[in-house]
Image (cartoon, rainbow, N blue to C red; front, side, top):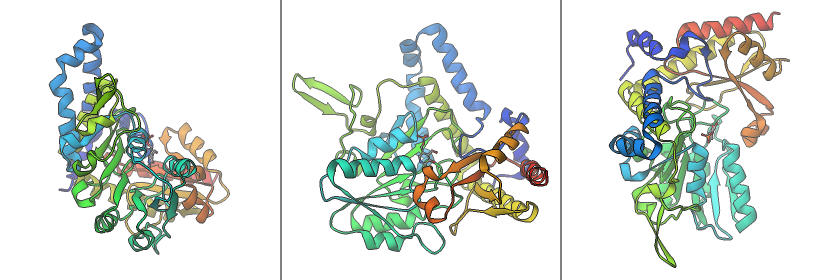
Length: 397
Ligand SMILES: Cc1ncc(COP(=O)(O)O)c(C=O)c1O
């Protein structure tokens, strides 16, 4: 359902940061809403006077309910969720749990995030696997048919970044899910930039594994993330790193890996932040993921248009048929870092995405770096106006 326009001022009031900065760095980390901050603060205060282990015992039911909230957000079941500290750990736990063997191959796209690709190269070096990168489609997004063409009898995993770090584009994760299912190949989706922005439903995507972070579009505190592992593949994957929470040392020479997705977690976690993640998932569910996406698309489109119409020398660098809230652009003869600094001095938060974060895509498009202004549903037209006004002043100075 659409977010009613009259709700936006309330949502901004619940986001105290909007009174202090023009925040257009939601792809970096969103501003937290008050309920998220309050959940973290209340727990931390309890811990201060009660003791760490004792506070966790007092909040056991609430902490456990985090799995329900996160699962509900993405259409999963509670036993399919592992709560970890960031998307990278979630992704690593999933990817490296596969028993890679020489001759195996993975099929991926040109929009992959640096950390993921480094892991591909590492596993290639270690085990002799092959990394197959599908050609981009006409729109610039990953092309399901090109991915299909690369799959053969030795393909063990399809790995896709849903929404890349350096672009507004949304890769066709659902269509690629159909191909993965048809081919019987495991499918790992990096949903770091999509959860909280795009209405992700693991049943619709048909992914086996999904990694996500808390701090970006989900608006949870920094240092939170989660991994989804489909029940039917759970028993086939043993985490690379297992501690006494993920497994039980059942006899002197044996251990039993736990049955649910929590086998991918660490025993020690930040309980206050876990409750922050729970509050953030519930906050997003209450507003409605479809409405969130609709408003983000609207604001993203409006910003692209304003930049084209009002800023001299600007090039919009977003590609793909479906575009969301990550608006990327360059300004002729202006180094991105200088633009960012200028905006920062005026309390306008944006970021720069460098070539090394998404090398294949950036090299193909001859880009060293792009400005990244990422909108969220709590942004408003005034925020976009402030950005374009500042950029106008910058380019004419
Ligand atoms: C597409 C993508 N994947 C993974 C990550 C890593 O996320 P985290 O920093 O939470 O580990 C990022 C971070 O920017 C990202 O944009």
